[in-house]
Structures are given as structure tokens and as C-alpha cells.
Length: 169
Image (tube, rainbow, N blue to C red):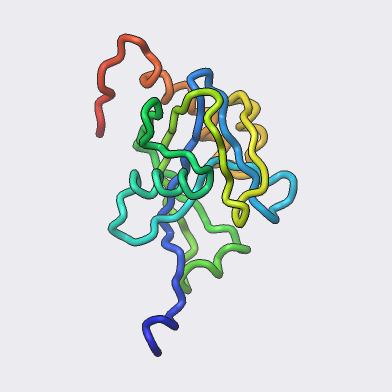
């Protein structure tokens, strides 16, 4: 079998990025073709095993929303939390045979209010900003809803006027 005919499976390692403002309004994007209730934060798999989670988060935010996570005034924060969950049956075909669980790393991205959003129409068909509690209720994924509910705790260190660098690890 030629190398170019080998199916490319998704890796079972992904990121979830809660994009938010200092006021804790959360950006939700609706999955194209997923129905009216498929609202979510930015999510996506690593492109290759060695790709750092932070690089995957930056890439996925740009691909799905057009937002540059590294732009001045934007603060990407690794929450150093991971979810592990069963892959939904309707999406198992995207993964190698036998892969049934995914590991998801959580990030927050604080952006200024009014940050422009440009969706990838192939992946998402609508976006909206909601207060963090409302965003949690709107998410179709339980792990995404939980991440929205954790936002005030993780965003606090980013927004404290006297805060120095947040210790990592």
C-alpha cells in the first residue's frame, strides 16, 4: 500500500480552549451540521504525537475562529487539567481501530471584548458570546460545560492587577 493511501486517523489527544473576555463572557461556536444545540468551545486534536498541547491550542483557535492566540492583549493559559473520556460512537471511525478513549487538555484564552471572530464554515456555522454560566448550560459536551464552570477560578490569576507570573506545573 502506498504511503499516500494510508488513512490518516485522528490522534486521541486533543485540546479544549475556553475563549473568554475579562468579564468572563465565553465564545461558543456551533458545529456545522450538528443541529441547533451543538454549541462548544474551540476543540481539536493534535496533528502529530510530538505536537505540544499549547501549539495545538494556538492552531485550533486560529483554524476555528480566526483569532490569533499570540496577539498582543491575548493571554493563553494552560490550566494543567486533562479530561479522559470515551469517544462518542458516531466519531469512532475518525480514529484508528481499537481507539475508544480520548485525552483532552484544557486551556483558557482571554481576549479583549469585541475581538473579531471568523469561523471556518466547513466546521462551524454560528458563534455567540455568553456569560460563563449561560455558556456552560449551552454546551452539548459535559466536559466543555464543566470547563466553562471552572473559568472564574482559572481566569482569576490572569485578571488580578497585582498578579505576577502564574507558577506553572
